[in-house]
Length: 499
Image (cartoon, rainbow, N blue to C red; front, side):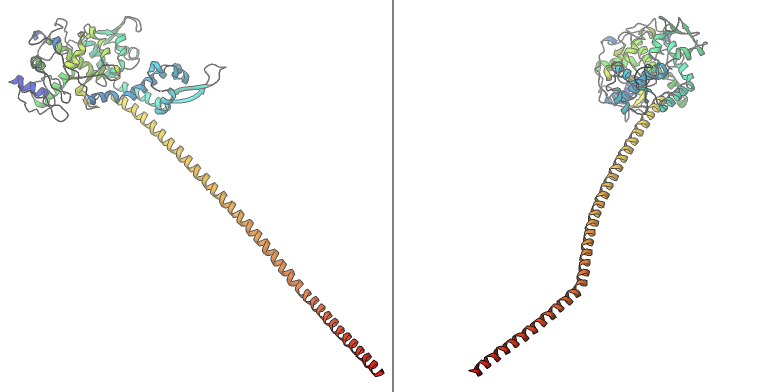
């Protein structure tokens, strides 16, 4: 009955957790989302390999897509691409590069757009200036880190220096999980960004801790290894064991290491898988720091140990995830089976296998709540500051664009006002011209009236004179006529009297 209750607690969850019920097993109430998949911790010598039920290799669980976990990969696309371009330029002599040279590296960097388009979409990272590639050549465009990016790089360096003890502990734990307490330097350099190690940690970090690390061979040569100088006699606690001890101190109960299981929404395990899980849960938790050379690779104990090793590796990663091909490079070092990728589908409540970007990526489910990282590594702040840098550059570009549009609008308004003023002035000029013409006409009329007024008396005088002269002439004519008539009458009378 205790086993049944443990199994039910494995799949009984609240809120964001998924509920998986089996008709054969009653559902038990659970006060916490953390579920126990192992019994009390035991010494390695007490662990015996045995097989109950179906073999591990025969178990098949269909992969199920989880959009919320895929969003984890989608949310980092822009950040990863920008970091890749920044590192490419920082590797150049003087940390400068001609723009056309970067354009030729687009395919290798997997830039989906032209470099100029990338710079417009991600302002604030680089400055563009003109310089000559050779003394006698024409100046061309160059790229160099902006002042804002230079400040970020200094801040990143300081954050890693402040967390140096954490980086040393991660490096030490990786070596302690390996079979011979040493790992190829080339492999460690390949995963340096997954764990947050500085780019030059083999030459800057390792030499400062000669009491812990020793380089076998010359760095850069093949082969060269990094190994522990004197491995600790005590086995360090894994992330799961530390959490169990913290809960033990709070609750006052014996520590019981347990995995956290969060099944995808709507997922139910088949009967065969339920039976295998029931047997698998009865087995004790196996520390990834214990030597497992004598354990059968096909046993359920090795399955438990492999889950613990991958869980611990992902817990040491900054973002609690790692590409499966990169994990495969450490199969020999951590004694992982060749078919270890099947673990991610056999334990969908512990891991999620993302296929985004054409690369299989193992993600630790318990570290995320939906697409938000809740199990935060101290070095995550570096990514947040870089994203803030991108945000500030984008906001600055928006402000500049708004100012540019405002300047254009203001210029257009001023131009419209100027055009309106010119129209008003033209109208005023026309009105002034009309008024002037009217005034000229009025003046001319007034002058005409004045001249006419001045000439009128003269004309009247002349007319009066003429009339007087005419009247005089008329009187004289009348007088002459009357005189003539009188003469005629007299003549007639004289003639009559003569007769």
